[in-house]
Image (tube, rainbow, N blue to C red; front, top):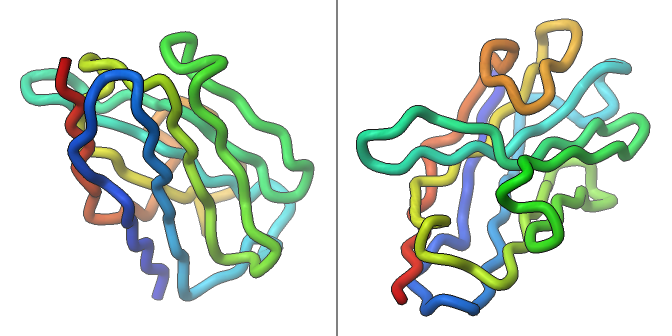
Length: 129
Protein backbone atom coordinates (compact mmCIF):
# COMPACT_ATOMS: atom_id res chain seq x y z
CA UNK A 1 0.00 0.00 0.00
CA UNK A 2 1.47 3.32 -1.08
CA UNK A 3 1.61 6.02 1.55
CA UNK A 4 3.00 9.55 1.29
CA UNK A 5 3.60 11.77 4.30
CA UNK A 6 4.52 15.45 4.00
CA UNK A 7 6.21 17.50 6.68
CA UNK A 8 7.90 20.86 7.10
CA UNK A 9 5.06 23.29 6.60
CA UNK A 10 5.10 26.40 8.75
CA UNK A 11 4.36 30.10 8.92
CA UNK A 12 7.14 32.40 7.74
CA UNK A 13 7.59 35.98 6.66
CA UNK A 14 8.04 37.00 3.06
CA UNK A 15 11.60 36.42 1.90
CA UNK A 16 12.04 33.46 4.21
CA UNK A 17 12.71 29.81 3.42
CA UNK A 18 11.15 26.46 4.17
CA UNK A 19 12.05 22.88 3.35
CA UNK A 20 9.23 20.43 2.80
CA UNK A 21 9.78 16.69 2.87
CA UNK A 22 7.74 13.85 1.45
CA UNK A 23 8.41 10.36 2.74
CA UNK A 24 7.08 7.48 0.69
CA UNK A 25 6.39 3.92 1.73
CA UNK A 26 4.96 0.91 -0.05
CA UNK A 27 7.19 1.29 -3.08
CA UNK A 28 10.64 2.54 -4.06
CA UNK A 29 11.53 5.24 -6.53
CA UNK A 30 13.18 2.72 -8.83
CA UNK A 31 10.07 0.52 -8.97
CA UNK A 32 9.68 1.30 -12.65
CA UNK A 33 11.22 3.53 -15.27
CA UNK A 34 8.62 6.31 -15.50
CA UNK A 35 8.15 6.84 -11.81
CA UNK A 36 7.99 10.45 -10.65
CA UNK A 37 6.97 12.57 -7.69
CA UNK A 38 5.36 15.95 -7.85
CA UNK A 39 4.65 18.72 -5.42
CA UNK A 40 1.33 20.49 -5.79
CA UNK A 41 -0.33 23.28 -3.87
CA UNK A 42 -3.83 24.50 -3.35
CA UNK A 43 -4.81 27.89 -1.96
CA UNK A 44 -8.31 28.55 -0.66
CA UNK A 45 -10.75 29.02 -3.51
CA UNK A 46 -8.21 27.99 -6.13
CA UNK A 47 -7.51 24.82 -8.05
CA UNK A 48 -4.66 22.54 -7.13
CA UNK A 49 -1.63 23.40 -9.23
CA UNK A 50 1.64 21.65 -9.98
CA UNK A 51 4.71 23.28 -8.47
CA UNK A 52 7.60 20.91 -9.17
CA UNK A 53 8.19 17.38 -10.37
CA UNK A 54 11.17 15.06 -10.38
CA UNK A 55 11.60 11.97 -12.53
CA UNK A 56 13.35 9.41 -10.36
CA UNK A 57 15.23 7.44 -12.99
CA UNK A 58 16.71 10.42 -14.84
CA UNK A 59 16.70 13.06 -12.15
CA UNK A 60 14.99 15.48 -14.55
CA UNK A 61 13.15 18.30 -12.80
CA UNK A 62 10.49 20.71 -13.94
CA UNK A 63 9.00 23.73 -12.24
CA UNK A 64 6.02 25.99 -12.57
CA UNK A 65 7.00 29.41 -13.89
CA UNK A 66 5.84 31.01 -10.65
CA UNK A 67 8.49 29.21 -8.61
CA UNK A 68 11.42 28.88 -11.01
CA UNK A 69 14.63 30.11 -9.47
CA UNK A 70 13.16 30.00 -5.96
CA UNK A 71 12.14 26.37 -5.39
CA UNK A 72 14.29 23.25 -5.78
CA UNK A 73 13.05 19.67 -5.80
CA UNK A 74 15.46 16.87 -4.93
CA UNK A 75 15.41 13.23 -3.93
CA UNK A 76 17.37 11.47 -1.24
CA UNK A 77 19.63 8.51 -1.77
CA UNK A 78 17.34 6.45 0.40
CA UNK A 79 14.82 6.17 -2.46
CA UNK A 80 11.92 7.18 -0.33
CA UNK A 81 12.28 10.91 0.39
CA UNK A 82 11.78 13.93 -1.81
CA UNK A 83 12.45 17.45 -0.60
CA UNK A 84 11.11 20.78 -1.83
CA UNK A 85 13.40 23.62 -0.82
CA UNK A 86 11.54 26.91 -0.99
CA UNK A 87 13.45 30.19 -0.87
CA UNK A 88 12.44 33.82 -1.26
CA UNK A 89 8.91 32.95 -0.26
CA UNK A 90 6.11 35.29 -1.21
CA UNK A 91 2.62 35.72 0.27
CA UNK A 92 1.21 34.19 -2.92
CA UNK A 93 3.03 30.95 -2.05
CA UNK A 94 0.60 30.49 0.83
CA UNK A 95 -1.23 27.20 0.29
CA UNK A 96 -1.59 23.61 1.37
CA UNK A 97 1.25 21.68 -0.24
CA UNK A 98 0.85 18.07 -1.33
CA UNK A 99 3.23 15.48 -2.71
CA UNK A 100 2.00 12.85 -5.11
CA UNK A 101 3.27 9.90 -7.11
CA UNK A 102 2.12 8.33 -10.34
CA UNK A 103 3.04 4.87 -9.04
CA UNK A 104 1.78 2.33 -10.06
CA UNK A 105 0.38 4.07 -13.15
CA UNK A 106 2.71 4.05 -16.13
CA UNK A 107 3.89 7.40 -17.40
CA UNK A 108 4.29 10.66 -15.57
CA UNK A 109 2.14 13.68 -16.42
CA UNK A 110 4.57 16.22 -15.05
CA UNK A 111 2.88 19.22 -13.48
CA UNK A 112 -0.58 18.00 -14.47
CA UNK A 113 -2.34 16.31 -11.60
CA UNK A 114 -4.37 13.92 -13.76
CA UNK A 115 -1.75 11.16 -13.83
CA UNK A 116 -1.02 10.98 -10.13
CA UNK A 117 -2.57 8.13 -8.21
CA UNK A 118 -1.43 8.56 -4.61
CA UNK A 119 -1.42 11.75 -2.55
CA UNK A 120 -0.25 12.80 0.86
CA UNK A 121 -2.44 14.57 3.38
CA UNK A 122 -0.77 17.93 2.83
CA UNK A 123 1.25 20.39 4.88
CA UNK A 124 0.33 24.05 5.31
CA UNK A 125 2.63 26.85 4.23
CA UNK A 126 1.71 30.39 5.23
CA UNK A 127 3.77 33.38 4.12
CA UNK A 128 3.01 36.73 5.66
CA UNK A 129 3.99 40.11 4.23
